[in-house]
Image (tube, rainbow, N blue to C red; front, side, top):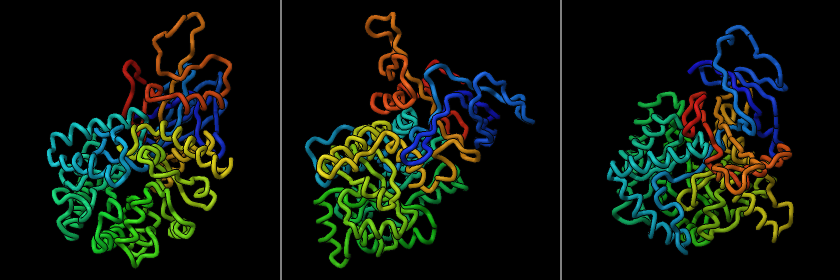
Amino acid sequence: MEKTIYIAPFIHCESLTELDVCPNGMIGVGADGKIAFVRRDMKGRQLPVEEGWEEAKVVSVGENCFFFPGFWVVDTHIHASQYPNAGVFGKSTLLDWLNTYTFPLESSFKDLDKAARIYNRVVARTLSHGTTTACYYATVHVPATNLLADICHSRGQRAFVGRVCMDRLSPEWYRDESTESAVNDTKASIDHIKQIDPEYELITPIITPRFAPSCTDATLTALGKLHHETDLPVQTHISENKSECQLVKELFPHSASYTDVYDSTGLLTSKTILAHAVHLSRDERKLIRERKAKISHCPASNTALTSGTAKVRTMLNEGLTVGLGTDVSGGYTPSLLAQCREAIFVSRHVAMDHGDDAKLSVEEALYLATRGGAEVVGLQDRIGGFEVGKDWDAQMVSLGPVVPETVGLDGREGLVEVFGGEGWEEKIAKWVYTGDDRNTVAVWVKGRLVHCREGWRP
């Protein structure tokens, strides 16, 4: 990498409810991939000639383009192995969906050639949607989990990669043999990631009990112990579906709640990511806040599997940290842009019963997908916005101007249509509601260009 000066409008979230829009920005990124300076109101001004920047590379973008933090910085919950099933769920709800679609597909990842094809595809697709960081669930297989870590590392995507642990309530042909094997195989994947990325600059192992019902008390406790010994993060599911919540009550009769199951086994800490959280009680939300655990909101999946509508406004008002997850393949797409739309729409369904305060704005959805997601995975000091010292995790977005002289389509199908006269607030709203991966021209992770559309080069 080389020192680079990016000249273009840039936009990021100033707070939960405010976007910072800089129409004439200039950002300098050092050879270490970190933001060295940020300049505003640079229209018509000469490039800075600060010492050491005279020979820097310059990237200047065209009209209707802008930089936004890595699209959308963090997918806080995605099952990489389930990607072939994206959009396939029939009329299932969670538990029968797992047995009908998920376990058969995941179990096939003992075939490493198949695993390589799928993992290469899902990493490429998430990058094409601008996802610079992803929290991946793999499978129970150590070689396939290690392969996913290798692919993310080689493609330059920042990733948390977890080998899935489960020693009950799954087919005998797809589960851990024992608590001991679950822990040992998890350690094996941790060791592999340490070998390829000793400082966890890009790839971080993450302890991954699938969810409480699929793990015995002994396995949850052992994984909690491993979590405290290694100080590695944890990811799992919680209160996604009412039938699942009832099952937890039956399997853990001595626990006060689903949340208490994780707390009592040492798995509920400030480094814990809890996906879904649709049916949490007030006491559970209080306990999660006290332990500083984080929530991954997966609106598309919750709708597709009829799991319920998570009360995100309530969580935010009560001080919980929330990010967005695609939850492929319960979710139908690896696009976090789509999750922003879904999060807004789910909040409006909640508002129909609970009042307009439940609604999320475009700005709030973008915050959850950037700074919120960064905080969920503990990287808020490194990514999520354009401040000096942060990594250059960014995407370049292009919107499509409508040519007045053109009758019908002009070859730019799929791009957000800008008719002229729209302000930045309108442009951003159009992007969120009508955009897709074709608007993502290029993606950088820690200063490294990791994806760009055909025909564009910096």
